[in-house]
Length: 320
Image (cartoon, rainbow, N blue to C red; front, side, top):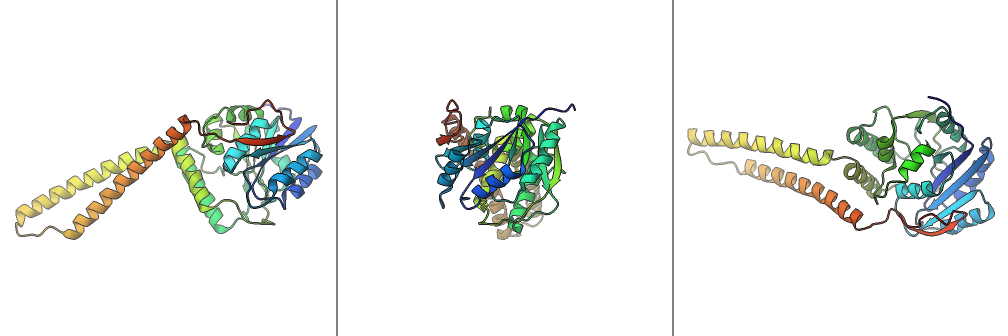
């Protein structure tokens, strides 16, 4: 791969209830990242409701022309917020970074250096993660599902802290669906990606915005938007249980002929009913999830809605 020139770097930060840390983070980024010709920081307020993140971010952008601020009308989710930032960034590459200080600004150089070396995407990986063990468990489950459903290499860790080049940015923003999964879209676009080891610091303030419900929503996005394996799984389970039912019916029939006075087992009957009912509900639920998302997508459910912009090109769409 031939080397490419990177003159302008965009740092995209989805912000959610981080009014106490975002000013410090922006200052740290501007202090430590200076070797590039241009640096822009894109703050995307994802409907923060517990603090004044919107006002703080707007104040930062109003006093610093290198900072763009996108204020979404409500909470759309991290991946939707990242896509909103990608729509307004103008760098030769973009680095996606969390708002909680767990990603060190100095590690941006490591990611961008690999973009310079000709890679399309550079994922970070951690020698030691400082998340709560439940969040780490959720990440492991997410990576396992991604390996199965998206053909992700098993040794690739899908981190939210990553760098992507302009080619991938331009392809990502073409996605119009209301349920984006950034890593799934990346794996559709390119195989030219690498990982680099970076530091992972402990959270200095607040708690993670990722709840169990948000993790489940993320997994559903992966299942229903980027793979039909769940539907194929329900078909396979249907065949398996049908085969088991046929075998058991044959066994019970033979037993009844051999032993006419043998009472049929109430326990086995109940187990069969519960298993078959569970399988049917699972299959119907999966089909319903696919159909529901198709209905919402065709019905015009927006990917994000912008309430206000600061230092951004006004020609961009405010609703997508």
